Length: 253
Image (cartoon, rainbow, N blue to C red):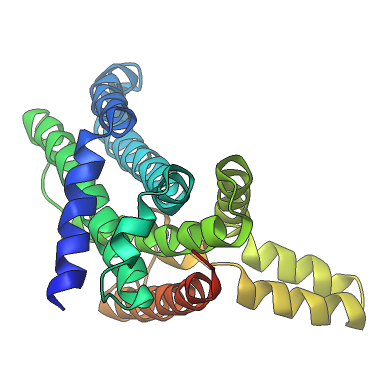
């Protein structure tokens, strides 16, 4: 356990030393500020525009940070041969994968906290009245990032090429928002297509389930929806980490 926490801590610090990570966070903060301009152009809907733009910006930049970090973490160490120094120690390989995942996830969560702190500060400055349902959207963004971090880590160990793993991670992120549409089209195309559509629906992450910002104003949005999303995100992430650990354990170093 001490080794796992040490790897997580090292990964967390490594991400903050990564210039590209800091650039992504900086652009996220600047986009939060730009939401004020969009809000000013929206007239009576200024607060709503600032709210929506801020949540979308935080999610996109957090996901970009997670995907980039997960794809490059292991691949860079494999290419630079520094991974040999770590694996010479009596460390179970799954501990290395989980430690890397936890460290990266904490770093991305820190960026979300930074961006959303600025976001809600802007809203309060504009006279926004707090809504608990809106605050629930932030941890759901964190859950979506957790799922994509685990999936991107799995892609990096599957393809062992940073550009290829990045493309597949982004593709899976996009398709993950259209799972229901894919199932519907497959159902309309016949039994065979429906069968494969069901399989694809299980493999793809159901990110629409974690899209709380689109469900805030819908009736029935509450603790049950949030708990369902938490359970799904934990199970999907656990499956990605289990597969990543199995792949990493079979690699020869």
